[in-house]
Each structure stands twice: as structure tokens, then as C-alpha cells.
Image (cartoon, rainbow, N blue to C red; front, side, top):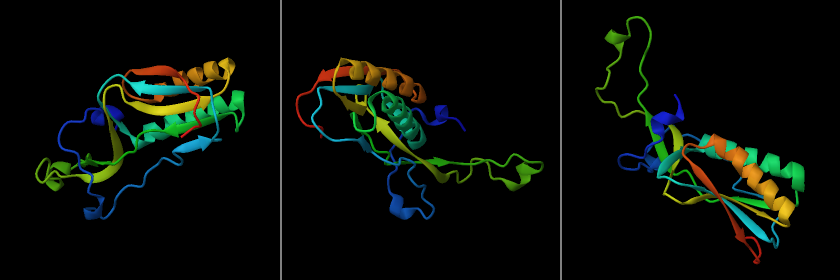
Length: 169
């Protein structure tokens, strides 16, 4: 299954995990990384459309951005933060695809599906990830890191740079 099957957020959101026995574990390891402190710039990754993102895509985006930025700034030269959390349960009605499956499977009868993954619904223009850095060379490195990381996401992203004088949140 590809993420294209779950990209659109049609229908009512299902978030009641307490009713499901085998609920999927979230794949995101950390929501914040780097070193907190006072930074000059905040580089944001925003999406231009209303979309639903799986937690595996969010984690791979975070890993790609952090790994790229860590090479240029070091571990303590930046602070990263994810701004979304995957609450929504994504269900899948798995079909049997073997010989004689038409006699065994029920097709679309009682097709509620099992919880297979988690997803986050993102509004148009919403910020997904932030990187806080100092200096112009680190700002360009953060933009490059987010540009390489946004390949992992569905939809069309935008990278914004904001002048920042406060401590990182």
C-alpha cells in the first residue's frame, strides 16, 4: 500500500484508540531535537494544501532534516521541533489474493478494517516542522535540509524563514 491511498482526508476522523485491541505504535522517535537556546532564525516547513500525512512519512522527514543539518552545524548548533502529532487511526480492509479467495473472503461486506497506521491531518498553510539556527550560513543549511526532507512528504511544501530573537520554545 502506498501513501497515495490515504492522502485525502475524506470522512470523519477516527481517534478512539481505547476501543481498539491492536492499536499501532507511533513511529516518531522524538518531537524535539538539538539544543535549546537563543537563535537568530526560525526556518519553517509548511504545506500548501489540506492533506493527511502518515506517521512514517513524518518520521522520515524529521530524520532527513536532522541528519543533513547535523553535518553542517553539529549537534548543538540547531534546535528542531515537529509541530504536528498523528492522532488519527487509519484502517485497512485487507483482501485475500490467493487461489480460491472468492469463496473465503467477504469482499466489502462488513468492511470496517483493522487499524494499520496513524495519520495527522494538516490544514492548508500549517507549519509541520521548525528548525532554529544562528547565522546566515546555518540558515542556508537549514533551508537546504528542509528542501531535501520535504521530498518524503506528500503535497507541495513551502519553506519560510522568520527572524527570531526569542529563546527557542
